Length: 415
Image 1: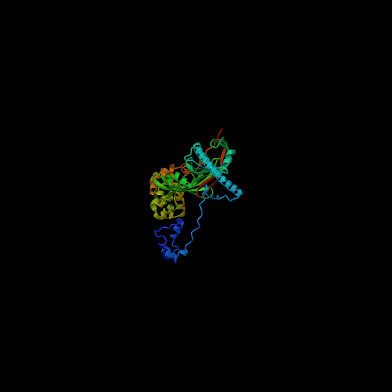
Image 2 (image 1 turned 90 degrees about the horizontal axis):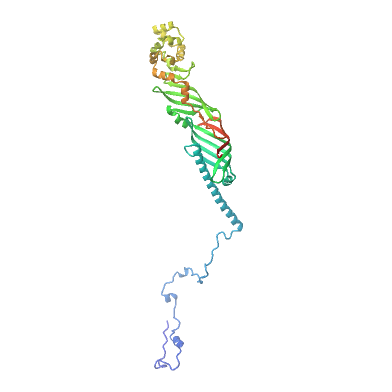
């Protein structure tokens, strides 16, 4: 670094010059000239190592002071007008579809409440209105289809698990969206389900279980209380249509088992009544006490088809008794005996056979119609106020009895 320049004191003895002073010259006189700097580090007294790797600052530009600044272009500004129109139509169609679905749900809810009140149902049914769009159908007062599902409909002694029906080409009697007074149904089809689960619950006081067997038969198995004893029950019911709106059951093969001793079949035919089982008849040959009890009653001897002399000989001689009771003929004849006929006149004999007279008395009063009524599965559909509904195609399925129904010219509400 060079030394600062000094003014000559002899030139201006008193430090002043006689010549007029120029302030700029005086300022220039104070300038010592450029500094002698060998490097930027020496000037700033800093270590600038690595400064070259930094990015240069962007060149400064004056700010824009126009109102609003620079406007950004919209996202769809560059799209063609036709594309914008298509997008708009899609959005409009989406809103229209939502409005149509909302109106549909509202109408279904109103219809379900109205049907619940009119049909006096325990719960509102399910209503599904078909066709699209709904609002145009409402304006035209004509619905393409209406599906109705009603659960747990009371029908005589049993409940119908589900009644489903679809009405086609429904014509509305209405003045507006919320003022539907009635409807006319030209055609209707559906089905009725009588489930075995409901039958087991509603007719199961005697612990009877119903299952399907074939296309038109139902099998009943369980127990039936009679005179304080639970007797095993077996029966079959044939399902058939009764008239146009109901089904009926013809009970057959009814049988009550009293253990392995006897079987009761209600009725008046020779094969019906109370009879010893094949096992019990065969046991008579080994149990002489029971055999003698039978042969000691003349009425039973005559029913066995033997003479009184033969019976007296068998009672007097064990060998002849064994020979008589051990024959296949005796077992068959003993099995054919209707013990109900002998219950009142010979209670002691039946007691020796292991039969309770009170039970026999109760069985004698258990007629075929009385037992069949306990197993009855019949039901009848209510008759509509206007129009016609009839049942058809009755069949037994795995889960219950299903009956198809058809209807025509039905009218609900209105004038």
